[in-house]
Image 1: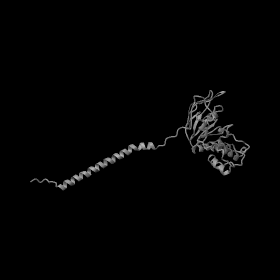
Image 2 (image 1 turned 90 degrees about the vertical axis):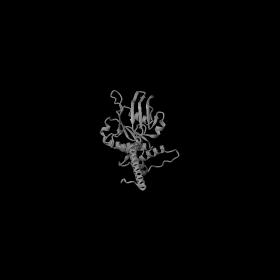
Image 3 (image 1 turned 45 degrees about the vertical axis):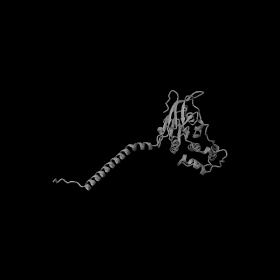
Image 4 (image 1 turned 180 degrees about the vertical axis):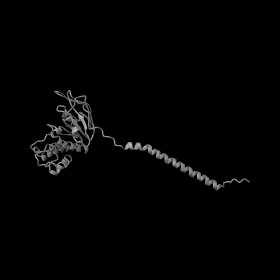
Amino acid sequence: MSSEHIPTREAEQQHVEQQHVEQQHVEQQHVEQQHVEQQHVEQPEADAAAEPTPPPPAVRARGLVLTGTRGPVYGPVDLDLPTGVLTVVQGPQGAGRSSLLLTLAGRMVPDRGSDLTVLGEDLPRRRGAVQRRAAVAGFAGVDELDDSVTVGDVTRERLAWLSPWYRWTGRVSQERFAALAAPVFGDRPLPRVQTVIWDLDEVDAMLLRVTLALAQEPDLLVVDDIDQVHDSGRRQTVWTRLEAVAAAGTTVIASVASLDEVARMHWWTTPEVVNLATGPHAVPAA
């Protein structure tokens, strides 16, 4: 008689069940491993999808040219100016800085053949839309202040201009003026609404013009001739406040005559720079 052990039916059943459990365990491990590998593969795609899409440029120009009755005013200029930042346009007298900024704000029409898009709108075809979304400050003959009236008077006039015809704009209190001006002036003491414009410091006069422009709640602010504040140390205050305006979400484009202005000033973040010049010593816009 053989001594080999013959398994009973119960033992065989237990053996089969044990194999079945082990097989399930192996299959479960395999599924879990595939799930982990799939997560590793899909995670970069999920991360990529989660990254915010950068906003389109505030200004895109190709071959932008303006010619006046006396010849070229500026251009050709190529521009790609980002949204929500400060851009400084540097150029000497006669380089066409003011005309370029007014073109970007929809107030002047460039030559035919110029390719210009501002705030996603084609210019000059969509001038009205750009004018509603772009405000101007610092321009001679455009937003100059009447020296004989008070801060409150010019503020009330601006608010009345922006309001519907049927809405009465009453006297501007110091509190109402502060609500408008505080984001522009920052820590700088605000002028009193009773102050006559003639008595304003040149920094305060410039910041007041910016305040009145921002009452429009624009997406784009263009500021001309920062050199109206003659001292470079005091001009630094204006630049710092324009940086703050841009940091709050308004795209700002401002011009100055000095070609080394950006290098001489202190910045939270170095602004975009456009060097603009005409004639035999022209510096290409960049």
